[in-house]
Length: 283
Image (cartoon, rainbow, N blue to C red; front, side, top):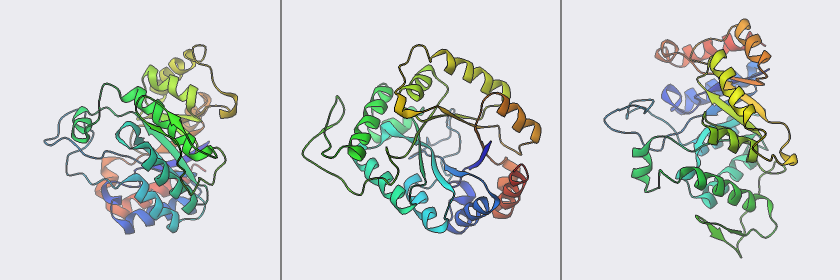
């Protein structure tokens, strides 16, 4: 079982010294990865389903991971997730290729379609077309990463007679990990992703999601070059026990990405460092 840490770019860690300290501690402790979250903007006043208040600090994922590429040496740097339909795919492809180069091939590209309509409205992006836009953007980004002479023709993005360097270090580009609990997310993970990511799921919730995901396998033609679908889960906030580890492992989960509880967050950097130590004991 791989163990990761979620939230390296927000809250207390939207401050560079704290971010670097926790990422280095995670690397030294033997964790496999650190993961960012993303909301470009947040509704004000705070209204559900927005996960945090509007004043909650959240660093841009690509900038945060580029910073951490210089502060760490071996740990994987993951977006968990980037809201793809809110981004320009050519610009995002350039940003992520840059992070992959700076980190010497340590980037994991976690993606999602988003769920806060006010965020889409503020960015001038259609909320209703977020799924098809995501699929097309990923295909366009892979064209920019992998084709000798990139070209793409789609409904939302088209280009030809251009090129973009640097290219990612990783063969095939950074692995794509699809987040989300909807049937669309399961199908997307199977069709275009190297992994699927479920956030805030206990053992039963993970079991239910994996049952639905596996039910989609007969409906989706999975390209052979994607390899087996890697399953990552973030359990509810708080420490992870050995029993939790065993239960998730029995479901076929290959990575647990721990997130700190509100009480740990109130303790600041020291609380996060103790949290990392607790996760490391599971190794």
